[in-house]
Length: 247
Image 1: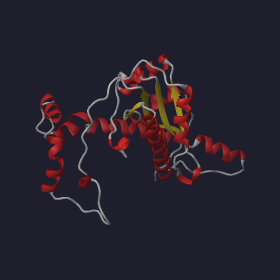
Image 2: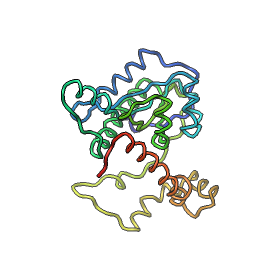
Image 3: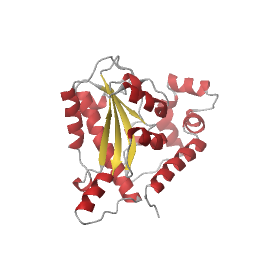
Image 4: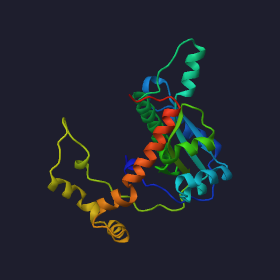
C-alpha cells in the first residue's frame, strides 16, 4: 500500500542499464495481468537502442526522458497475432470494432500498470507517455507494426536520478461513489478543485499562460479542441485503413 500511495512519475534517470533478468521479470509480471478471455490481445515493443529512441523522441514531443531512460516500452493493442492463429485454425475473428478496440486498450493498460508496479518494487522509476496515441501512425512506422497492432501507451523505465515531490490528486470524494453516481453541484465542484487551484504550481501555470484559471490552461493551452480533433482524426483514419469499423 505504501508503494502505491507514494507513487511519483520519474522524468530523470541515472546512466545505468537495467539488468536483463530484471527486465524479463518486469515483462513477465505484465503478461500475468488479468485480460479479457485470456486472449492477450496486446504486445510490448522494447526499445533500448539509443538511435531508435532518437527516432521516437520527436513523436513524444522531445521529452528528454525518452532518450535518457535505458528502456522505453511501447504497449500495443494487438489483434494481428490472434487473427493469424484463427486463420491457421480454420476460423475467423471479428475484433476490429469498437468493443474490441476498448477491450484491447483496457487489457494493454492493465499489462502496462503491472509492469509499472513491478518496476517500482525493484527500485526503478517509471513515467507514462500520454503522447503515444497522438502519433500512433508515425510510431507504428518506426516500430514496423503490422495491421492490427496499435500503440496505446508507452513507458520510460530506469533508475531514478532523484525523487520529485508527489503530484497532487483530487480528494477521494471527488472520484468514489457508493451504490450510485452522485452528481455534483457547482459549489461542490469548486470545493473539490480548490486545493488543486490553490497550488503554487497551478498559479504559475495560469500566470505564464495568461489565463484566468487552471481549467482554461487545460482546455485552451494543454489540450486544445483543435489539437484534440486533429489527433483524433489521425487515429481514426489509421484505424479505418486497418479495417476497424465503428458503426
